[in-house]
Amino acid sequence: MGSRYFLDTSYVAKRSHREAAVALLESLANDPLITICAFIVMNDMGIHEALTADDHFRQAGFRALLLE
Image (cartoon, rainbow, N blue to C red; front, side, top):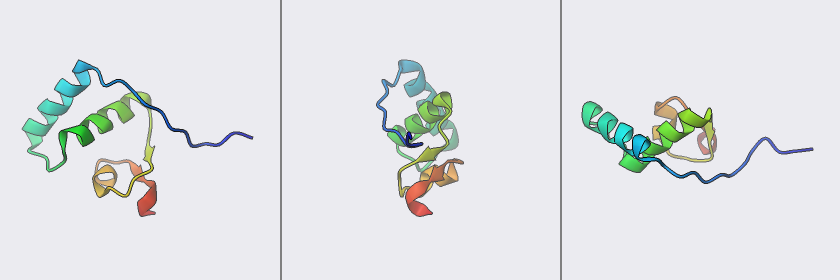
C-alpha cells in the first residue's frame, strides 16, 4: 500500500522567480522570496499540504502539517 506523502525536488523556472518577485513587491509581503516561490510552485503542482511549521504556508492557504 502506497503512502500519500512524498518528497520531490523541483527546478524553479525564471517565470516562477519573476512571478514571486512581482508578488513580493506588490504586496510588500513579509515572506521571504523563496517562500513565495514555494507557494507558486506548489500551486502549479496542485500541492495543498506542506511538512512545515511555518505559519506563512497556512496564511497562504496551505495545510502546514506540523502546525496541526
